[in-house]
Amino acid sequence: MATFPVINLEKLNGEERAATMEQIKDACENWGFFELLNHGIPHDFLDTVERLTKEHYKKCMEQRFKELVASKAEVTDMDWESTFFLRHLPESNMSEIPDLRHEYREVMREFALKLEKLAEDLLDLLCENLGLEKGYLKKAFHGTRGPTYGTKVSNYPPCPTPDKIKGLRAHTDAGGIILLFQDAQVSGLQLLKDGEWVDVPPVRHSIVINLGDQLEVITNGKYKSVEHRVVAQTNGARMSIASFYNPGNDAVIHPAPALVEKKQLYPKFVFEDYMKLYAGLKFQAKKPRFEAMKARETTLPIATA
Image 1: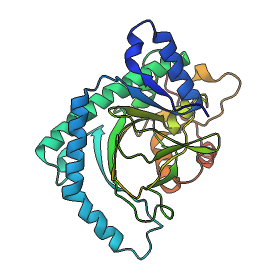
Image 2 (image 1 turned 45 degrees about the vertical axis):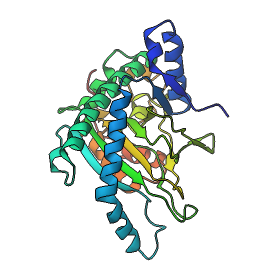
Image 3 (image 1 turned 120 degrees about the vertical axis):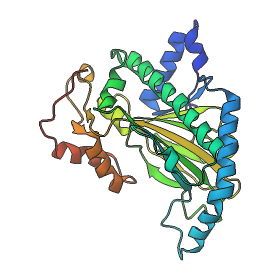
Image 4 (image 1 turned 135 degrees about the horizontal axis):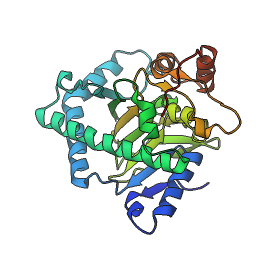
């Protein structure tokens, strides 16, 4: 099997730009996932994010998770993860999250800004590869209030029965583009490729990118969201910080006309409607979700982009 795509973004600035763009294209078309090195976010800053996240888990989350597990007779019906969510756009909820030390709150604000810029830069690289005008995807995500953007901070504690329970069950991501800063020591993230589960290698200071359902729709299936899961581990707690750069709630999502060669393969819908459907069907196949949206497709206006 081909090796998991790891892409050095620094090479976009030199003679290897064309080859690097080809690597990104291949990763989007054949994997739905890739890992970025030299993405412009300083390594010492990422070290600070990791340190503060692990400290916060130890101090504020670990005991709660142990109590949750202890309260259950069976733990096969839950994901073996301890999480909290930060919302950044259209408005932030950072000040409302309890237990966050001032330093951690400020670092996560800065982290969100850096990841937002990287997401928008990547969307423009995808536009270039797809033959869409620069800014097309950002505009497609915009809606009336801009994109929705938030971060899921997860810790996966050591699990005594990894054969019976998943860290996180298999699913595709509903949204746009996902940027993941993951533990460099403890693996666990896997994606489904050609019917086999493939490990996403933990590489220090890398950012893992994966494509959500909305990019599959907008590219008319040229790029696809890919099923992935987290496998619970017996030793070592795994940290995972996933930032989701998604369309605005009222954004009308549809295949880009320039990418519809013969047939429009995906419906047109309002992103919020898709999310409501996804909430109950996250761990099921995505095709019925698209079919359900097609069944309720109406004469939504197509935004000119």
